[in-house]
Image (cartoon, rainbow, N blue to C red; front, side, top):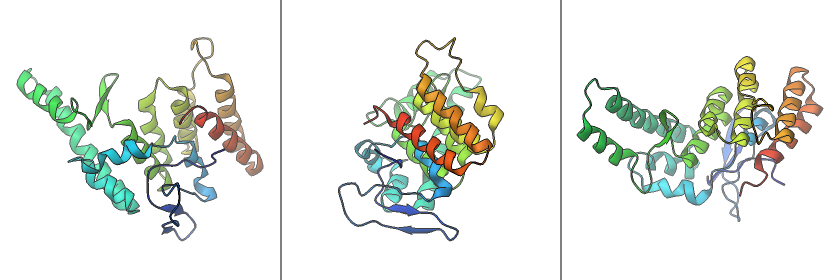
Length: 233
């Protein structure tokens, strides 16, 4: 049973009133992240698979951030990945926001950022989003930095997957965006494959957080983590 999210990072995180970072001893899972109680909700975020994340080490735009992440330089990694996404999303936005339909520019931009073996961005609904392993790493870094809202919003890009949505909703609720969080809870009468155990666990988490019941909160977090990670390799 996994109580804490893992991502492919060669460090361990220990968060306290005086934040400290330390690399763990070598082992089978050197990317394990352990979090202090105040950041236990970060365990809702599904893990980025090591091979998928580290495949981006040589990426022109994502590479520096991934390497910093691998080296355990968290704040540097967070900034670099954020800067990379700002450039990528700006390039794509400028290309498609033009008043003139420049097919040559569109094709060039898509070839540069999307249509390649390791894309810088992938289509999602009516916009582009970071590739899933990058998105998960960014969300985890935001979460352990205390930005639960940003982490939750990042997970909304996987809006067709109820497990990602449950994680997003829980993090938004933790961030105090409770009305917004509840607006993303699916209607059991509308969603054909409504995952009742998952959303019941989300409701239990909401209640424990509302009542500031730490024992109930620990139980709710543990149960929700189990359900989110169920079937995820």
